[in-house]
Length: 425
Length: 154
Ligand SMILES: Cc1cc2nc3c(=O)[nH]c(=O)nc-3n(C[C@H](O)[C@H](O)[C@H](O)COP(=O)(O)O)c2cc1C
Ligand code: SF4
Ligand code: FES
Image (cartoon, rainbow over all chains, first blue to last red; front, top):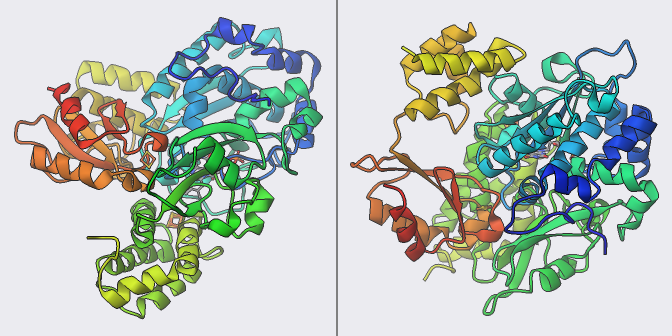
């Protein structure tokens, strides 16, 4: 099985230096693209590969890039931003790539920037990734020294300035338009769309924001082609995927596997099954803002369309397991504490609704819930759902809640009936 | 007043930035690095360098969780209170910390050694429960291990 994204990663050891990365075939894709391919060629191969964004929404990457104005009349400068904010609870995949093979991210960023004709690029990194910050800055310095970055990349007329921007906290910074405000030095509230960043982004210029894992795929697609990329997958979305499992399993971890690996295989083979004494009750499959899947979904393939069909989202592909010794109300309450705390406060339904949801769940968990609370929570799920807010934070926040009300309804009702949490003492 | 060193660093940042105001977060981080936190006075002086009003810069300063607008101790403990860590034993860890340090979230020990803050998922969910002391990540942390870890920070 091929693992292009993680083949250079040596757990517990320093990432490859520039020389070692080159020896492992690194920067060959960049040489190939700058020598023999136009930006449009790079765009076309990425489009043909069926690569879909790994940041959560699964938007086709080639299509996103194709919205960027090209040619001499295009507004300048254009920007590429690598989204390395990774603050979605339960998500720990981008860290692996950033710390494990920083040159791969640099090469991917240069190739992606080349494809859209960007002359400036940022890696937007969450504050707490101190090690990644050091390693990325080192890789950028090495790459600049070897002319893979900077003025006249590899002796061509292409210039690229790549920088790490280390953030100052807040989940909302990962939302692509909030991220642009953060880069501009403002409060990181999202922007109204349209206009979309592809035409009007950072400083009003065309900007592409892509997830770390998305960017990491680009050199391999350029090197090996679209057909190869599609062949890595067992589903209609091409490539491999970094999957992760956390919670009470025997071996929590992250693994690169064919796109379309099933929930069961991840849980049982890779994570080693549940810990002794714990039974499986459900899983949020792709980070905190995805709907629960339960035992009937164990054979669902973890690709964008299959998880959607099962009523949830692939999201980040890193799942959090709910076991039988953990209270589902407490579990969902923990998630909503996060979303309520991280609401940026720009739109009323989210600013007011999230704290209400959080308090209602806390009351139920503490045995102070009322029967009508169930209706209130259901109503909030509708009010905070898609279409009522500026960004996807609120709709994401209610996904685990609405599905918990469906799959674990009896557990909620029991808290209210018995006026206590059945999992406590 | 800002020190010469702080001004030098902020000016270097300004030269790297597309616009002056976009250096705000970086400038505040420079202040925080040298003083541990960002006072009202510092906000005023930095704002002047960025050609912003103090109110404009403060709106930025108060938005981001990593910009400390109150003094903190010599070391900052951030314990992850997000889902995987909660499932894997955040509660006992938190209780042990509070009992040992005798402070709640947002507070600093009387000897000024530690400030305790919550933090969202540290991207170390496979090592839950996780915590950060200054820039060092630990996980999985048991209450017993935590005692040893804290000994490394004086
Ligand atoms: C509240 C919120 C937080 C987000 N955080 C991240 C993040 O940390 N990393 C990320 O890549 N995408 C995040 N996204 C998705 C981005 O808005 C954007 O869709 C993504 O970076 C696009 O990259 P892709 O097309 O490569 O997936 C977030 C979205 C929302 C609504
Ligand atoms: S949905 Fe919430 S986080 Fe998103 S813009 Fe509105 S208030 Fe901010
Ligand atoms: S939930 Fe604590 S590190 Fe992810």
